[in-house]
Image (cartoon, rainbow, N blue to C red; front, top):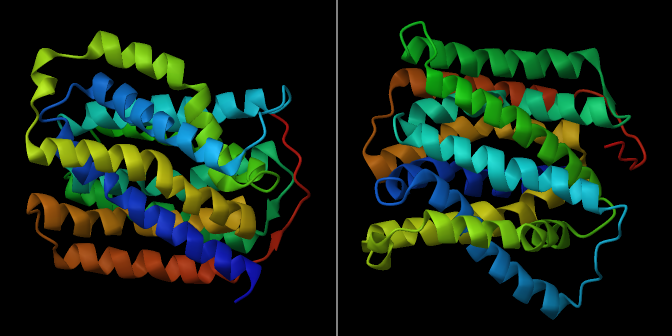
Length: 296
């Protein structure tokens, strides 16, 4: 297996982990406040990250790297989790998962804007086609309109795309596990303070379902998933591996059916097949690689 295919495989494992985030968040926000959930899951993951960094004897970040970690934290730790938590209080996870289908194009665009990678026109055509398919699906499911929550999710995508692009590039120079670990540790003070002020007494005795959901979001969505995702972006390139995200909405649909009892329709299967075809086609398109050079 060549390096690019390894990157695609790692990226898919990361996306599969992330695809469970929406339905599990839907379960968690029935007990936890959206803001507490965002701060607390990152704080818990940050404590795990401290242990990981100690065992790895990781070097401290340099002053030059700190702005990059700040960009990563902005999207992955704050904006995206908070907005999807708010959206999950009033939206179906399956519908929201489809809206997140714009992530591949957003991530590839961020990579092109920030770095010197230049995808071919054929690559862009398949990326736009894939995003068009998932947005069309969302419109059909929403009877021709997008809700206020959909716009929150789109905003979340934009911030997360920049974080993904920066994190993927930084992971070419530093191990992906170290990148997400330092991101969580550096943001830990803010997350501890946010958790303290948004905590409610009822959280001392959550249901088993709520507790398991919180632990999954902390350990996998916020921490372990990035081991695979940033590692995949580093090996295969941001623009190429970002196309694996096109599968995330449909993995989320399956997860929503399993965890929340939502029904998978023939329309779901049709659009899943079409999007998968665009991923396979996009993988064959030319991507001109560039040396790691972050201009954030």
